[in-house]
Length: 276
Image (cartoon, rainbow, N blue to C red; front, side, top):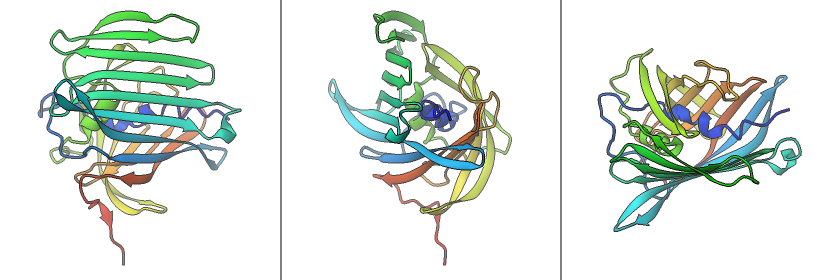
C-alpha cells in the first residue's frame, strides 16, 4: 500500500485555493479567519473496500512581525502515523508569510521528506518587479540552487492561496461555472481552474451535519492524482468557509481528508445544522 496521500494533502486542499481571481480583483479584505485559528485533519486511504487512517495534517494561523507591521504566518505540517513509516514515511512542512490586508505572498518555505524524496524550497516574492527569487535543492547531498522566476500578477503560493480563497464571495456563482486559478509552486506558475458544483449537506460522523459549498478543481499533470475534475471539496457554507471534507481517486485507490478539530474560528459555525 502506498501512502503518498500525505505528501499531496496540501494539493488536496488546493480545492480551497481554486477560487482565485474573478471580478473581485487580485486582492481582497480578510473576513473569514483570524490569528490563532487551527484546523486538524485525518487522512484516510481507501483500497480494496477498506478505509485506513494513515496520517494527519494541521493548518494554523499565527502572526509575524516584519518591519513595523504584523503579517500572517500560515503553517501546515503533515505526517504519516509511525506504524506506517516502514511503508512510506512522510514528514512535510509548509510555511507562508503574507500581507494582512492584501494577502500578497511575501515568502514561502517548503520542507518535504517523503520516503526517498527530499525537497527544500524558499521563495521570496517581489511584486513590484513581478519576480520570485527562489532557493531550492532536491537532494540532501546537493547544494542550493538560486533562480529568478517571472511571476504573473494575481498569483499565490500554495498556502496563501488557500486562505485567500476562504474570502471569496460564492453568491454570484452558478452550477458549472469555471473560475481560473493561478498558483506558484515547483519553481513555476501554474494555470488551472475549478468548477463550482453548488451546495449540499454532508454528515460527518462526530461533528454533525453541515450545509456546504461544493466544487471540483482541475488537477494538473504530474501529481499522484488522476488528471481531470475527480476531486470533490466541501467547505462550510458560512462566514468561516472551513474545508470539512476532500475526496479524490488517485492512481491506486482513493484518499480522503476529513476535519477532526477546529479551534480559534473567527465566526460562529452557522453551517452546522441543529438536529432535534
